[in-house]
Every structure is written in structure tokens, then in C-alpha cells.
Length: 236
Image (cartoon, rainbow, N blue to C red; front, side, top):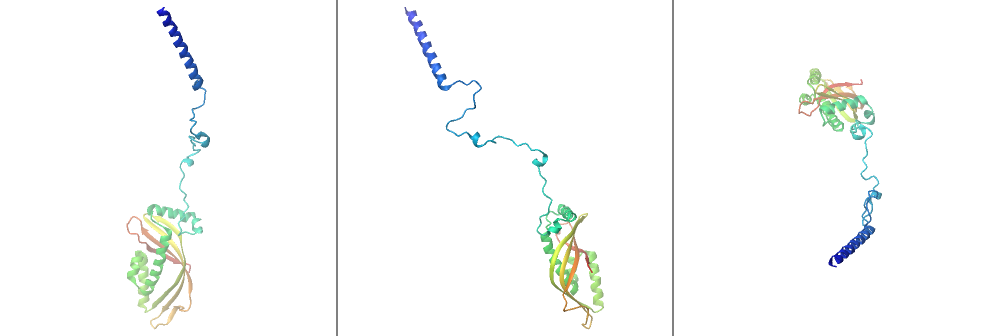
């Protein structure tokens, strides 16, 4: 009898267990590998808000990965006409390789000052000032002209009324030497007097428009940042 009751108990426990398993499967469901991903009902589905999430854009070419910087010189010291001059831009680019600090706008500020100082020093015969602003070759020419003028007793009066414009027209490297040619358009009053004070050249009452081309140079291998006048020419 005792064994019969034990057998009945086992059957009852098995039926109860089977019932519980069926109930649990009805509530939780069964994952068979074909259902969608799990979604927390307390959170919004971010896949709908970010359709491109985890999408990697593949570059179509090397240009999409790396773009060369634009070579157009946007230096405010250059005009639109100068920016269109490929030879000039190429020269400035070469110059900047040797001297990365070069800036056209800053250069022209200094060039204007040098233009005025050199004209004044030449007219007054100030050799010391000229020697510090000119290359040795140009200084020798200027000094010789001053010597000739003084030997004849002539005096020069050079008044710079104003500089209308100053533009870079050429730039190039010659070895370690950087060369920059600037076109100066200015208004001047030029007078040359003889030993008696008579005007033998120019007119004190006439303002003349003058166009000069001055080439400045500096050795970029040296720490000295100063430029020196290396050549001059005019339209006359």
C-alpha cells in the first residue's frame, strides 16, 4: 500500500510540473531564432530615430580622405590681379618655404617706410642711413651719385607728397636669397639747385607722378629679418 501511495504522489508531482511548464511558456513565449531583436518596452526604439546609426560611409576616392590645402594666397596684402598671377603666387609660395613668416601686407608696410627713408637720405646725402638700407652694390651707386653731386656744389630737394599705391609685382628665390619687387606709384616734387641756389632741374611748383620698381632682397638663411634694396628702375 505504501508503495502505491508513493507512485500516486510521483504522478501528481509530474502533472503539476507539466502544468507549470506550459503556463510559463504561454507567458514568456519561446525563442526559436526567427523573432526580432529584444526591445525594452520602457525605452523608445532608437533605430527609428537614427536610421543611419552604425552606418560607415566608405570614401569613394583618396580625395575624400585627404584634401590638399588650397594654394590660393588670401594674404590681404595682395590684390585680385595679383592673386590671378600664377607666376607671382608661385614665387611667393617658394619664398614662404624658405621664410614661413613672410606676409605680403606686412612687407608692403615696411617697403613704404623704406621708400620714403631712402628717397630722403639720397636727397640729403645721408650715407649712413643709406648703407643700412641698401645692398652693397646699390649703396656704391648711390654714394657715387652723391659724391658727384656734391663735387659740383649741387643740392637736391626731394619731397615725397604721397605714395598712391605699392604693389608686389614679382617674387622669387635665388639660392637662399628672397627677392620681392614692388611697384611704387607716388607723387613727388623734385628740385636740383646749383651752387648759387638756382633751379637747374625740376620745378618747385610741380607735383610729378612717378612710377618706380624697387627690388628688395634678404638672405633667408640668416636670422636678420631686414630687407635691403637690391635694384631700382623706373618707367622713365
